[in-house]
Length: 224
Length: 215
Image 1 (cartoon, rainbow over the protein chains, first blue to last red):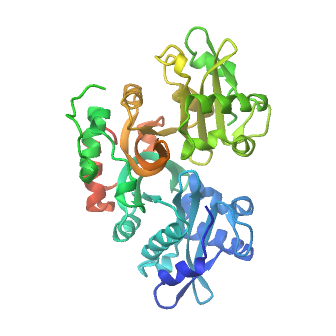
Image 2 (image 1 turned 180 degrees about the horizontal axis):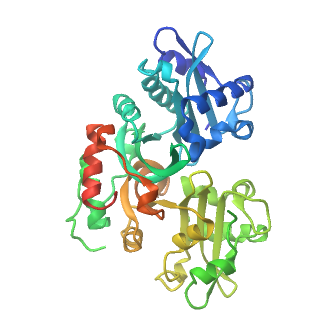
Image 3 (image 1 turned 30 degrees about the vertical axis):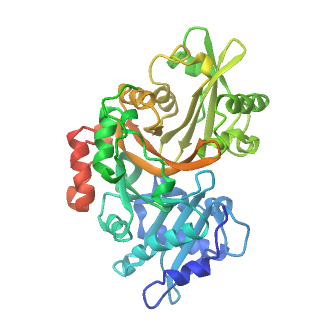
């Protein structure tokens, strides 16, 4: 599963007037690391803390014009000012794309860059043949949840304590995150689970979240 | 945060009588792949299929005596016979443990190879990890029951994330259930403020709170 031609995706999902996309280049890494530290200091610990390290990009990221790796990073610029970034992991075995981490500069929040980033991820995933795109959203603010819902992603669950963040100077806590996804294949390519193969708890939550997929083929009290 | 030895795991979570742990070694990789092919012939696609590729073990899996890697595979043997395997991935920065795969040989199914207690929790605690998560098949109830009975919370689903060969030559995306266990105390969790949730998230959060899946 190869990252596709990004220019086609950039054209498909244009940023608001005055902004432009650019794939990460080696020369951009120091500025990106400094920007993340300034915009979102809470990620000095936790799963995204690797984005503050030069070595992370050297070993993991796909740089513009260089060999493909599993992480793709796209920057959003306004003139010469870095306004935000978004990144995805490809997962070839699942033919899936994971929206791993992104931040919009406080000076550019409200410009709908986040919603564009969600739509761009979907365009890239479709272009590379992925059937599923997913991401996690913080519950500390509603903006990411809103951007995902506006971009048509479905809420799949809430993970209590999934990640760690600095919540005050010197104070680190485990935080809740909601996860969202979009299935990119026709419903006929999805195997509907048999409610009879679910425990009562599983059946109850599944029916609540996915009533359109809950079609018992046999009475839910059936034997295993 | 090194992976434990087989002896350390035996001390905290012994396997069933007659069984023993063995941390995967380079020389056992071919044997493991052959066994997985025999036990699970449908694994030509999807997340589990990586375990059939030798290069996956070279690039991603900690092999006893080798360099640190984020994926750990423990074999279960009965005498010299391979009876099962457990594979996990650590998230070093999130202090998390993802249980990616458990397979028990058909001849050893029925619980006799299984350890007393919670292997994943014992492993996480040895390594100072605080959060365990896994995706569970909806093809049968056994795994759901296992995690429910070991104190894990059902927190959602992944409809279409993974792929399986559901019949010869027919590949479909499947639905899996997400179970988690947070080992950190309640005081270590930042309780979310419902005013920072969309109505959709708030509705699910309230339901999960009623069901004690979240604090």
